[in-house]
Length: 357
Figure 1 (spheres, helix red, strand yellow):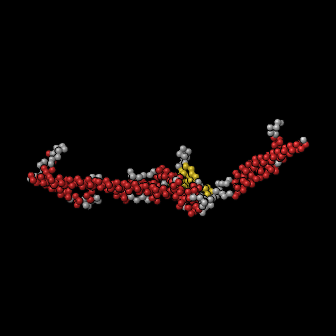
Figure 2 (tube, one colour):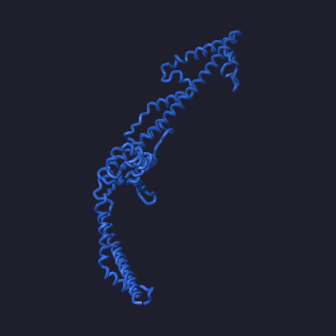
Figure 3 (cartoon, rainbow, N blue to C red):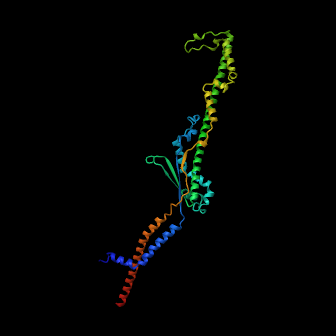
């Protein structure tokens, strides 16, 4: 065997000779790993599963009065819920709202860190899984939460889901109400424009009738010059030709419109084209009441429960890996010690050889 070749039998002899060191390396790895596995703080994980709600859960958001203003499908509602549960904004708001409780949990808050840094640590305790349309039959969102206290892990996760869904529903409510208010403002503006137009046309017609009455009176025209059957096509004779009797009757009718319509729901507004319909829509929108207690963006299919066993540290896995690592560490340590001893023997041999020389 050449000097640069490795003799396996020599290696085995070295290991046997330094078996104490091999054993010490093995024991050290196993002991250190076992100490870590059995003394480190256990971490527990709990989860919540959210699924789409039924069609009945969004009926209130699709009231007939909201046609063309606001609507929400079950799919859109679930998308809102999913966005809320994954939202950093809602998670930060929850962190601030439950700060005192979070501060009392070991490992969840560090007073030496800033608020933003503590939130970043808290945020990392969450993980999520979203359904795949191609693989999964049902649409769902799974939110996982890890904490050293199993009971508080379940309580906090349930509270977070309720907080996020409630906050999103509040946003939906604000959006809907703002759109309804904007639509009411628009309709009221349109109604005022129709009234202004009507008043202008009424004033113009009154002036024209009064002018025609003066002319008819001046020329002595009491009765109409033409009968209705004699007026052909689009020809319109001058107003004074209708005679003072007809003009006086029209003028009186214009003045009596308010009194004539006083028993009607919208009074004189009934004489204005399209206005009663606008006023009815305004009334319907103002009277609209939505029972948000009947609205659900999503349903909690599986609430968080107190986990029984921790997810980490994985004690048996750590110990098993430490055994494997200990074997290699022990062998390496034995070989290194043997190599060190051979190196010392070589140095001693050289020294003795020099002395004899």
